[in-house]
Length: 436
Image 1 (cartoon, rainbow, N blue to C red):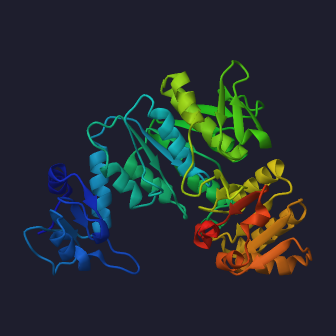
Image 2 (cartoon, rainbow, N blue to C red; image 1 turned 180 degrees about the vertical axis):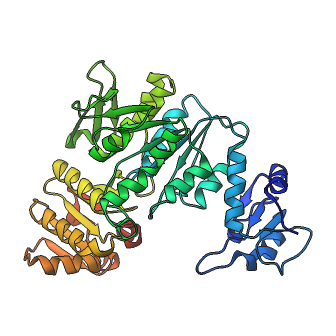
């Protein structure tokens, strides 16, 4: 017998924990046997029950039992259950998407809002068609605010996630050259990310619009309800701040030109300052006490290889190796160059760029060759090919197949007293340079 959403939701209220992986089954949870290109969760249903799951939701009609719940499609059932749960919630749901900085902005906004509210936010970067439902199903009765990160690499995905999460508010960090293999062009990225603003406009929601990004200005024009912010006074944002940074400051300062308000941060780069300003804007809109919010934002420390700034073996290290695309790569390099023009950089291949990959990597090679960096490590086949294509002969360039090759000849003593940038896609594992 097929299990409908009403019955499934009743069971969820009795067992309000969802598991999708037998490697971390939670006692009395409901296990969803999801299927992927290389796995079939149905084959693990019995194991999930043995490990303590109360029920297993499956799509294989051959699986039967008192604790087996049959549905036609386990992913669709998970999404439908999450949407049903969402419709029982009468609290703000803020959705965040964008090409760069989604997770950092989510963490900053959560930090700001947590001063006043009990906030539930996306764990890590679980921001896809599975992660968004899991985020919603993690909302308990004591939660006052949900911050939901949404990622996509094809058109239509943000619209689908919005239908599931039904956000009341939304923010797009920026529009850049990310996932071009799926979007085709920056215009494709703009259209796809703009699906969030379209949903909000159709459902009476409120958007937070970064007026420093011309693409977001365009997307924000038709919106009925919006709050604007930025560093550029020309568009006349509702919230305007100035940005300053210097090497001895080890971070940046955001200053409200209309008052004495200032946010001092140890974070790196104007792009993170934009993320910080977004968080302040959201917090102010939701009436978070200003002084407490500024204190919380000022002490925020990024983690998980996202714009981490630390001293490692007497070397100033900027570790921004969680992800990379042409936009974020150039921003990081330029910001690092402004502070440490003679520093060293280790940059790794940028993934999911499709036909634009050779040109994008060549652009970065030419960009860094015109700068004063002491050493330039290029890690990965795409960067190696770009260096050959460029015809540049410069002893500062050190190409390598992978980070292990760099590590083999690395001596931290050579970098002592200097600064180093690590920037690349997650799969390049640049952070392994720090492994002893």
